[in-house]
Image (cartoon, rainbow, N blue to C red):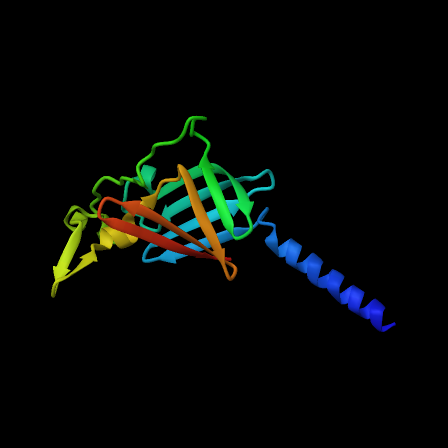
Length: 167
């Protein structure tokens, strides 16, 4: 009887761990100041990454940007590939450039906020545009799963920016 209980417990833990490893049908979200990024995993190893600026006073074409990709999971690493990538590789800019907007809700998209960095006491800080306004562009990228969260970083010409997605 004791052996049966141990075997049942082992089967339960194995099945629950394997179902947690499956990303299909799951959605992960990153939220910041007036913005939301959502990764939605579909059942056929495709996914979409949707950037939504929660600002009514910016151009409609930039309010919602969707990038479609395929993905493969290797343990705690997920490799994404944009649908538009050719077999020989992919060369996209790290982020999608949003033209300067005239917004009272999303001031980080305005022209004055586009300055690359601010220098304070010898240290360099990214502008609000880099913190809140850069839209990551997927080419062939890697994300990592850490404690039920997805970590994603992208390099820019002046450093990098990153996101932590939660269920």
